[in-house]
Structures are given as C-alpha cells and as structure tokens.
Image 1 (cartoon, rainbow, N blue to C red):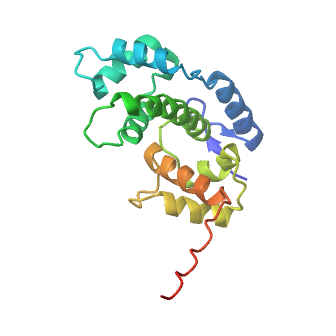
Image 2 (cartoon, rainbow, N blue to C red):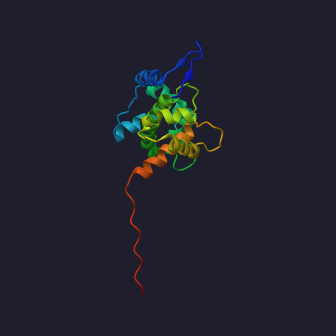
Image 3 (cartoon, helix red, strand yellow):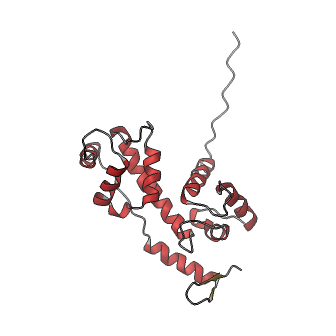
Amino acid sequence: VRKKKEEAGGKAKLPWQIKAERKKKAQELKQPAIEMPSKEERTKLFNRMDNNGNGGLSLAEIDKGVIELFPSFNCKPALMRAYKAADRSGDGFIGRREFRLLLKYLVYFNNLFHKFAEIDADGDRRLSASEFYDGCGIVGVNLDREMAEAEFGKMDDNGGGYVLFDEFCVWCAEREVEDDGAEEPEPEPEPAP
C-alpha cells in the first residue's frame, strides 16, 4: 500500500484519499473541445491568426491566437506538441494546409495533458514510477507493478527516474499504434519473369 506524505500536515495519505483527490482533479480539468470549423471558417481563422500576413503561422502567432480564441487550450506543453506535430514541412511555420492538423492536434494533446496532470499526483509536471503505476488506468492501461515499471523504464528516455510530458506523449502514441490491431499484411512476392 502506497502512502504519500502531505506537505502541510505531514500526515500520510491513504490510497482511497489519493484516488478521491485524482477524481476531484479530473473534474476540475474538464477536457475542452474544438468543433472543427469548415474550410471557409478555417481560412478566416487562419487569416485572423496570421498577424504579419506572410501565409505561415509562427509559434508566437499560434500562442497569441490560442490565448485569444481558445483560452481553454492555453496549455504550453500541449501547444508545443501540437505545433511540432502539425509542422509537416519542418519549416517552423504552420501553413494553410497544416492548419487543420494543428487544430486536431490541439485537442488531442490537450486531452493527453489533462490525463497526464491527473496521473501527476503531486503536481510537479513529471511522473514518478509510483504515480504512473497508480494512475496508468487513467489512460486505459491496466498493468501489474512489474509491467508498469517496465513500461515506465521504456518511457524514461534519460533514465532520470521521472517521465516528462513529451516522453509520456511518445509512449501513448506508440501504444495507440500498437493497440490499433490493424496489421498490414506481408507483401506478396512479385512473380518471376
């Protein structure tokens, strides 16, 4: 049974108290959503965010636009992940064709950040192995302690004993792809001439 010290009173928290706190935290972190605008609306939205009119959104323009237009998505770690994922050209700007992806990734990574924050019992924006084991069910994964420690080790790229949001995102994406279940069939050999 894992017990956790409260910072203020020094009293140990029992597992049911930790679960109750997580449930309360999850309710406070209601996951926002963006209804995908039509192509015409996306064009207007893109133009509104493109402050300098160069046809590409910089990270600063996206940050400003999110704060003004989608304040419930103002989560810097999730915004940065969405920006990097949507920049398919790798030029550091989100073009018109990448903008739809940016909006989709904003929703995806914000939702993932809310799950991360719910698992992060002490609120230090990093997960310990114990926090991950106690909260991995939040992301729909039920593991025994040994398996949870092995998965945590896979996530902890630098071996620092903690997992940051970026590492958590990579692990979740890999699990989604693995759990997809849709394996591509092996290509058939070409007939001999």
